[in-house]
Image (cartoon, rainbow, N blue to C red):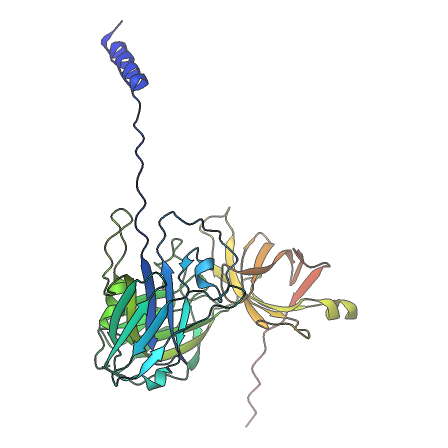
Length: 399
């Protein structure tokens, strides 16, 4: 028996004789966490209050609803707390919880203080007392600056345009916070400058798949806000997954943030791109009179959002669709869509609004010349959409 085999047998015998000891790791202490940002453009000020998770409560996720931010995010709401916000002039505002008899709205507290009445560069003091007697205290100072109350609306061709925004210096601002809403989640960053330049090919580095920031067919909002030190420090730091430390926390008696911001710029973009490929364009539902009446969706506007990197992959599709609104219908009449196209085969996710994670319907179809023919997942019947010729500019009158 050679030395290599002897060494292998010795290792096997050593492993077989080993038994790992089981060590019980104690639960970490659950703490109260608050999140409140005073906004100069909000109708009221809102605070979210919850418990940090430590394994003592079983979490059951539910479909997302704005009325239940903690349950939807698998959090543990902290109900029944007493909260008071004291303004620089000594005025006291009591926080009222959204909690209903049905149990929704737990942990969401609102202070009846319109943003337009916030004192600038004066200290606001927040005190929160839980039903268990825990006391949290935090302070913030609202920056100066003129609020942007009405949006600047413009079209944005992703293939050719660059968005340039400027704003005046805001007294008391620690930094400026730029946020772009996208269907895959916001792209946001801080800057100390008073201008920013956003190109159409910008990528969202805050999403794992690195999608484009600007998506053709979607309305997208861009905001620039002056923020205080609390907001800046909390959102520029991270919680280390191993040590659990790293966040800059200025809430006494708990964790979280009481920050403040003033929105200085508000821009709403209608993002477009050239529609040159066969799958791209404006498509209108076509059918019999009975089919027209019963059709759930009446039009599609499609763009090739990204071309496939390889021939065996599908192109990414984006755009919007038009619903046939009926009595009692709620939600958007024109909503976003995302999907794919390869060799004439099309799959489209019709979104409930403009968010990639919320699908209302699926359409699987084939492209035949200028016509899309397919079926929905949840609606009966055949879907036929015919591409419309782009509108021609009016001829110039002769001299």
